[in-house]
Amino acid sequence: MTKLNSNDLYVEFAGVNVSAHFTAELKYSASRALVEVTAGAGVEYIQRQTGLGDTKLTLSLAYTIAAFETYRQILVTGAEGLLVYGPEGRVAGKPRFECVMIVESFDMVQSIKKEFVVCELSLAGKDAPVMTIEGGGKF
Amino acid sequence: MSNATQAVFTAIQRRLLNKGVWQERIHAQVVPPQVVRPYAVYFVVGGGPTNQTRAKDALLTVTVKCVAEKLSDATQGAQEIAQLLHNHGAQDGDDLPTVTGWQITTVTQGRAVSQLDMFSGTVAIYHEGNQYEFMVQEVV
Image (cartoon, rainbow over all chains, first blue to last red; front, side, top):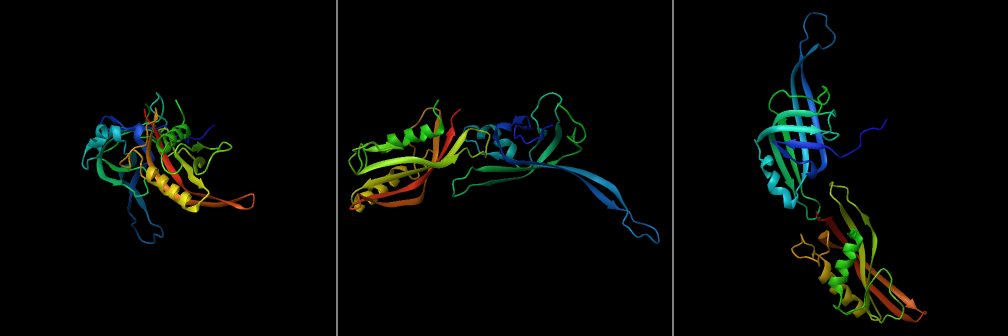
């Protein structure tokens, strides 16, 4: 059984398919806050319960000259939209993450060394995700 | 369609032909016998796809040098090569001759190449030039 090492992903935000501009790295992060609820006498270990969940995603997009105008609107901080991410593309039955997300930050670096210009996009979930990869979401 | 190396070679050939101290004596890879010096020669020394994007591209390092019997001719030739190639990519604010299917986006002068050949142990032959980094992207 092979392990996934492909970069042939699918990623779309606010209706714009930016898969072809993907570069460097996409990082999907699901987290859950833990709340300490330690109580009682003679307790020797911290007791916790689960708190609120959070979903974040960072995405690097190449500055593609001929196509920049087609996706620059999704780079605007505060922009909201449905984020769809499939690590194995969008073939039916393959894992899928879907969540309405908000653009938290947008960074762009240009180097004197003539390296590819990369648009770094940081997104945070607006609310609970529609479906998650680890939760069994599928195309 | 040509590959990235062919695209770079074609662009260099078109840009350097009938220029500088070498004039029409510009050769890829191998210099034919009996060629009069000074001449210019270029060859790939390394490189390949960058694998930084999903598009086809290549970052190729090409040595381009002038070979002459006088050091002054060789160094003048090296300067003329630099003037014709360095920062002459499409994204450098200039552009090399176009090659179908590929765009040379940047050309960057790199480390110096300097060599002295003692032909027959008595005649000095000077090689002066640079390695150039050609960033080539497929045009789709």
